[in-house]
Length: 281
Image (cartoon, rainbow, N blue to C red; front, side, top):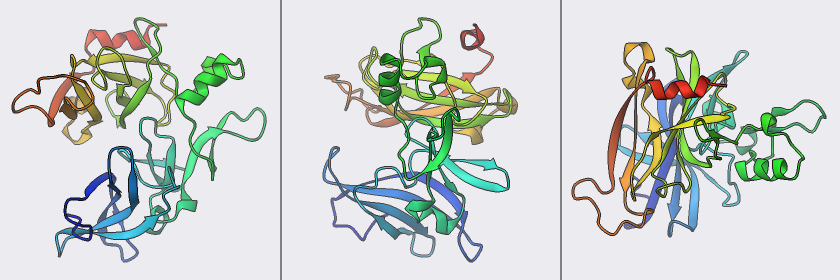
């Protein structure tokens, strides 16, 4: 799929999306990351799929210091005024770029969601500043610089009230609830990257003050969960999500035959009684 790199090189892709190029042709674009290891990135940029040659070709390479002004995660299409955007993030959809072929290749076209420089404006879309992290907001709350009720990246367990730090996931519009749904896994908890949480919000950027656990994997990881909205049933009442089931991050000594490093698919009924905890004051 990426024959331009030396054989054996590790190449990850994310941020998959389909949009029209300058000629009006629909094309698939992705963010690629060529890596030496999990910790060390060697090169990254955007690539487009060539349907004639059945492989990806590099569109643009980015500076290694560019940590956020590029496609990533699981983008969704949103609309603000007359402009359509691709909106995304590792967990929270706090990065956006105009849904245009030229724009996704230009780091300066990307915006992040964060505190305004103007007093009293709260969080706004701004350029040239990275998105705010949950660690930053937690520090601001702890230092009494910010109220918890004003945060956009902090979540508590709907039943226990405990903090839940989320790692990776997806945000999707749900036509049944007429809300956005967040499905993401937890850092830590009872299994490393194996606990999956669910939240609801009126806006794609959140906030998500309360989340509830919807899946658990004892001593196993279930990383990079994503909702597959094209499989929704009953007008969105029943949804499906999947993730990668693996021992890699969990410390489990005995990989499960035929399942280790494989995708597991879940079905979730949004009328299930446990989800009603989210609407409890």
